Amino acid sequence: MVRVRFAPSPTGLLHIGNARTALFNWLYAKRYKGSFILRVEDTDVARSEKRYTEQIIEDLRWLGLDWQEGPGVGGDYGPYIQSERLHLYREFSHKLLNDAKAYHCYCTPQELEERRQTARSAGKPPRYDNRCRNLSDEQRNAFEGAGRPSSIRFVVSEEVVAFEDLVRGRCAFDMGLVGDFVIMKSDDTPSFHFAVAVDDALMKITHVIRGEDHLSNTPCHILLFRALGYDPPLFAHISLTMGPDRTLLSKRHGAASVSEYRRLGYLPEALVNYMALLGWCPGDKREKFNIEDAVKKFDVKDISKSASIFDQQKLDWLGSQYLREANLDRLTDLSIPHFKQSGLIQDGFDRAKIKSIVEAVRPGLSRLLQIPDEARFFFEEPTLDKKVTELLSSNTAERILTAMLKKLQQISGLDKSSPYGDKFREIVKDIGVETSLKGKALLMPIRLALTGKERGPELFAIAPILGLEECKKRIENALLILTKK
Image (cartoon, rainbow, N blue to C red):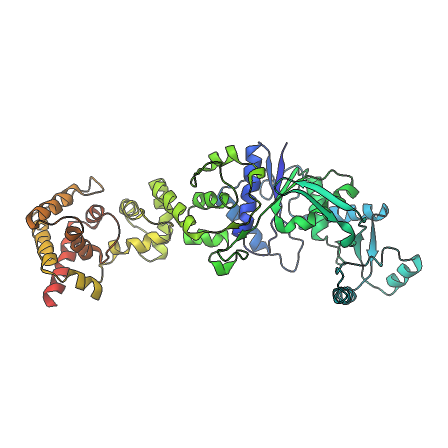
């Protein structure tokens, strides 16, 4: 059975590149009816923080990427947080020591750095020179007696390690250029290489799908698997996501973390759809597809080797498509916190009105955070600034608004049974006949008077929400400004 894992380090927020890796692992597990495992790699004690672990878990759940094993779920191969697995790394490092596949290294950080600098100056690879591999008992005892701390290094055989990458094809690395690497640090915590290999082996991971920045780590992991007596999993190294300037995607390109996209109000399905397009497509020209379609067609072998370029405009386009099609009740519930945060509503608000407003303003928007701004004129009488006043400063505009006010004063209410206000539509149609105007020339003065904006929701959806009295009041105010001008 396929078993894949996503193993973030809680040293920061979950950024789009890592979330995409999680998505590809999740899709692969779903496609082949396997297991998606979440493992938290928090052995970097100095930088790991519990709040990041909690936020990563929350962001993954928000994206809908559920896991079959991991924190909060459990499983047969836990614990799934590396800081709770330290006893396992110590046990396996002692096994390698006993098998003469590892040894204690007493070199200090300062000595190692000096040797790296010397190697670079000589034009050589700054690899460890393996000097502690063959220490005599006398030398080891001397270091121990002096109280020197020691790390544990893995014995790297000088061979070419080759493997078939599911994305990149055949890859080969000359391990003679690597040197013996640390598997347990002097503080008795595992190195990244060792913890990953031990965990992947014990958790029976069958496929490792990760970023191409880990490609050079893979031969080290393969050697560790073999030394520990396990078959290596299959590997798939996916290209990285770049910004429009073809540098690694970062905050300077805009929002970088999933939680920031949540704050901005993108729907999770829109973000998931877009991330799937970063280096993969469902085999046709579609750019919008649901997650079920992606699961049916996804395979890592179809992922592009080329770097994907983050396109904010495409994300916004997808965001607008999903916002337009979202269930209205769900969208209303999701919008309410944004309305409250903007100060437009408080407890005790009219939910039915908010629902009508959301329905009216959502076309053309790409995210939830835009809804309160687009809807502000429903709650606050618009200020007719200089530009709007100039647009209204014509005899034609005054004629239209005067006729509109007169007709509104002759009725008892606007029809709210339809989101597009049939009564209001009839009035506008009558004014068009009377003035011989139509289209923008007819509608723009009315829109400006009611909203203070040149663009916005469908005009015939606005009036029933504002109500008869508010419409009359706003048109009266616009006419008053025009007569004073």
